[in-house]
Length: 79
Image (cartoon, rainbow, N blue to C red):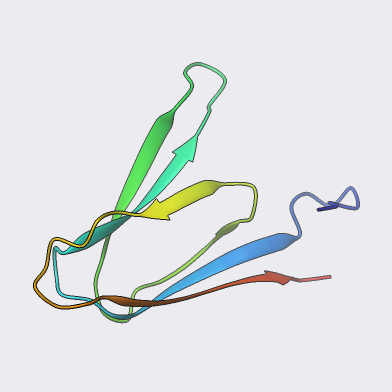
């Protein structure tokens, strides 16, 4: 991935199409120059939409609900 000197031009988009409330989280992993392996968590539920830099590591936690969760993800560039 190239940045062209404009910062991170590639963005990841995560849209929660359908999920039970409190069934899973979107978890970001990052290093902040003071500690490695830091995390930040966003509870996911239906219609939550998140845009993040493509360099940020993330995962969706295990589904703790009784029904399947559905997500749409894509990577886009604003160049």
